[in-house]
Length: 307
Length: 271
Image (cartoon, rainbow over all chains, first blue to last red; front, top):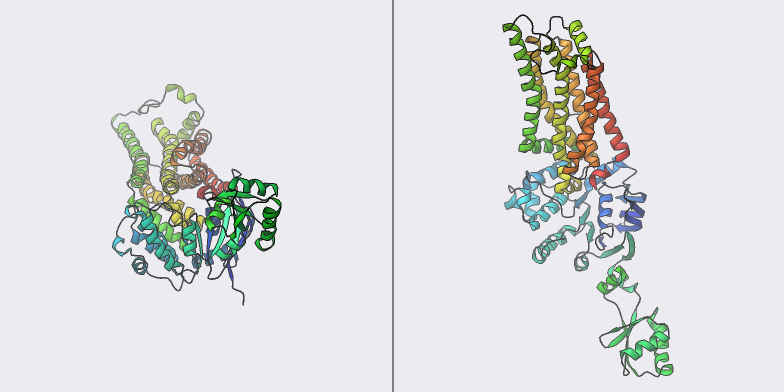
């Protein structure tokens, strides 16, 4: 049986009053239990997507369904399903007149009509916040501030968890520490993680939606993303890189020098590889001593796509 | 607070708690209405009363109050003369000037400024501190957040202004010998001014990006109800000016809330 789709963006466009485009015809679907990430640089539309999901922005085109409810069209139903969703905002400010415990108590009371609500004590315990219960929120370190935001999102044991760059701006060690908690929090629940950090995305998620300039550039599992990229051949010849590049350019191939050899883009390695070799050996009379298919790294692919 | 939904009520609790913990909000809530609703009126009414008692016969026109002699010919003052004579026989011009011209202005200023000043810090300060992000991540709608903030500021203002108005009412009835009608319409004026303050606060929250802009554009927005006050004081005779002005300010507040939400939308507040 097909899994339920819990977050569904259908051709969503968001144009701000100053005409900036936050999202452009963006479509993606996240199934129940998937750990998906919105991967993209600053300004790619990740936070706009989260804002639409939390109901603070309305799309100017298309529709967004969260747990089957159209956010803009069904405000009453949205209010009720919103209690089944936990959201961790990006780098939130902290109150100077509230303690961590008071904030968690507020979160608990707002989620109180949920059956599975956990107590502030349990949330604090879970994220190692117990000793900071009476500490002013703005006195907490960044690490603990982010944990607090995560704890507030988890108090109702939500079915869907939305995390907007939870480790952005953190030092490596605390970020690593927080990722361990995120891993626990994401277990057995549909998650949408927004991040610009590919390493983090690969560690925590099994499904990726690559955003660039508000558009979806690629979507799928990590393997599907890799397979969908244009394969390349690494070619080396005795005559050297310059001669190889010149000959490949004559034959109309896209190629670039890389570590003493040349990387050539080909639509299909199996079909186009032998043809390329024949041309180089027979027509160009180049002594090719290496020709092997190469899959680009994810990072390389994304950097290339970003350009 | 039964008018509010359960989520909004929880947020209202939080906002009231934060207001009572904020020295700025507490100072604003007590000092502004304290000066305008209690100290000013008490001083004016009591001094005028004793002046009448000890320096009989009644003082000449405008005695005891710094009013230029030519003011009697100005728009509104001529009506005050007539009104005082018609409505409050035997009342001195100074007392009439205070009761019918100064008092409505003081009431409007107190009930308009107090909630606006605290709301600015609560609404725009929250956005500037980015703690609004935390609130929006909770399972509430932006509408709940803004409503709770405005309601908390209004509650706070009413909780301080109404008891102070109680002091005024006792004083005015016993010393200046005004009737229940006067006190009733003055209460309507206070409530109308608070309603106008809600509209002004919402418009400021939706239009100003930061506190500094809010403070400068705030004077423009507040100029509208203040101009209305001036017009009513000048054109409407007698105690009816309190009622008409109160109802007009109430309508202005409702109109500002409707217009703000219809044409500006909450997105301006959250982005």
